[in-house]
Amino acid sequence: MDIELQLPPNQVDTGEEDSVRFIGNATVLLRYGGFTILTDPTFVHRHEKVDLGHGLHATRLTDPAMEVEELPPLDLVLLSHYHGDHFDQVAQAKLDRSLPVVTTPQARDQLHEVGFSQAVGLDTWDTATVRKGDRRLRITSCPGRHGPGISDLVLPDVMGSVLQADDAAVSTIYVSGDTLMYDDLEQIPKRYPEVDLGLFHLGGTKVLGIMVTMDAEQGVEAVRLIDPSTAIPIHFDDYDVFTSPLSDFTQAAEREGLRDRVVVLERGQAHPLR
Image (tube, rainbow, N blue to C red; front, side, top):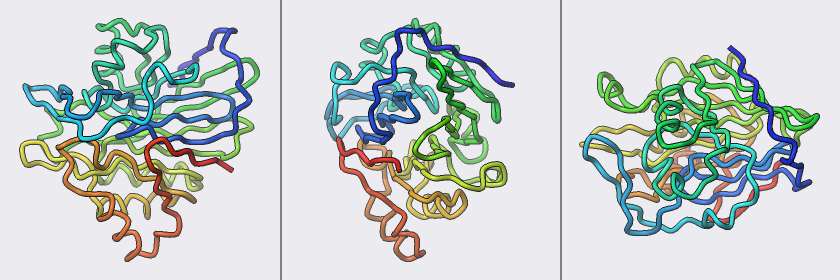
């Protein structure tokens, strides 16, 4: 299924260079092919808690590199799933509720309940085509699984994403979302054999002792599978539920001969897309 999204005429091209700026956790500001995209917005500060559902919470250990008020005008939000560490209370209160949010059908329904009426939901391999003037961006939902075995049944639905913009500096971007490695991910490189940039959600998140995001070893396995020209790790140390630090990932990438394609960004740092 292909969903069409037409951005309003007042959404103008800023002319900014294509880049990815790391704000913190899984939140990045992506300028891509004339579009300005915010991923998985979380803006709470250090020591503040977010809701993980079922009475569980996570405490933030860092501050975001930007505040909501400092963001440039956005075209859309890309949301892997609806959890408090990916769409927190600050995002809910301060983001423009008329913004399109591209996410899972489950998260779409939850966002509609809190006033984000332009949220759209994609099933796996569905595509949202976003148009702004003569520019076009395609966002395709990719497989993702937030937990092993039956634990996935009590966790939110999650999606990865492939982004492809006309006339962009790079042709294909992959965003993993909060997934573990599992067989369905093998379909991604079959459909998209040439990925320029991969953003990988890591951290080895554990909830009630169960790992629900990739740790260092799975992250390296994912990089090898997707095979992007550049791999940027995100989502690795911002909350107290993370157990696998960034250093574990970079060391594992070094051992596997992949370190030369890994770009580590400090919070607030931007990486140009060329």
